[in-house]
Length: 591
Image (cartoon, rainbow, N blue to C red; front, side):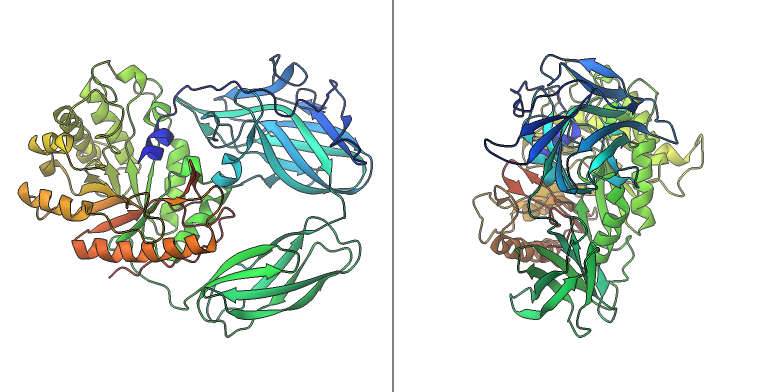
């Protein structure tokens, strides 16, 4: 789908935006007090990004920045092992309490106003341990534009002691740019806004667990309670029926407390409500694990981990989707970033993600992205002009050991000057590279080469017909296509006819014995924010029904779009909520 192509090849769009936070005045080297609003008693502190007390990050000039300068990190050089790329700020806080922290900086994901991205940040307050600012894509996507490629990023609520305080932001993980893997941070300034009323509930959570295991509800404040903090809570099941509830108190001087939930709760999806409006969700899994090996599991999810899963969350995400019943992950990396110059490979970042996924029992289907600019010609876009580049790159990817490699994504509707027959030649060259990965490897080879999966076709038509007419099927282990219900079908989406259409096409080409994989399916749930409870039910039902109908149509494997939280252009796709918590969906148990 179109989102894949935007994630796959970031264009060089740069949108100049007027400064949305220009009312905050900064003075270089100091934290300046301003009013949050006319007549407000609590001052907002502005901390200039370009004036840390200690840093190893350079400063750049730009008249759009609040002080005419900003902190500017953009390097492929790894950070120092002991400090990372960091900046420490000292600020005098008038009084102790909880404060909201906002940064005018580069977001770690594409936002509604820019495709430029930065690295995920870590934050330490008062020389304490670093916390990963690992918000989901929907959290960052909605950030307000500031200027240029910078956004107003909400970095959470923090308890401060009053007096002199320190903040250290650091970068230890790279991000994927148009044609490189780099460490990136542009930071104009930080805003520190005191919150009235003292600590409030930050979250209610229940760790993932199985029936028969103890379950504990954890209630957490933004800061230490100055006095006993009473909380009334209720736990309701998928059908809205009350399953548990009661009253508890967070003791004075504590940030949290836990409550044991009833041992007899049946497996299912639950939602927790508190009397102050805080909500959370959790899943109580069946006592028995699915126990199906990934090689025969027929259910997968699309991930694109470099764009949608913060590095700090990847291991937990992998464990969660495996518990959900997922056996396969459809992932991928940017070819221009992985091979910025001919033969100069930089795949370590993605290889590490692949190892993490596989360590949790997940099989990986990697997708080849469009070629780098250095490999393309005007006539070959988006393919390399010399097919030897496709052969070598596919061979390199195969050596990393994914279970399968898909040889492009929706080339029939992508920006292209190639035709189906030209794409067939590309598929053959890449397939040969994958097959040869075991022949004369420069390092330890995979035991067997990855499966070769044909490009994911968006819709049947002349492009696919011409590609198939050029004998690509005999180079492949699996045929691939995509299918979605009509976007207008919001309340009862129908399973698309693409499956029947593609199976009929395979029979016409004598490919009855080749398994067909539906490498993208999903539902377009239109919402300005998160899914409503009614939309969650619609998507939960369609997830199961589409899987059953796909298998009935003869699909050998099916991948939902998408696994991680994902909100794009007014549509929510993810199987998980914006906090990476479970929505009321149950992965089907593949036969």
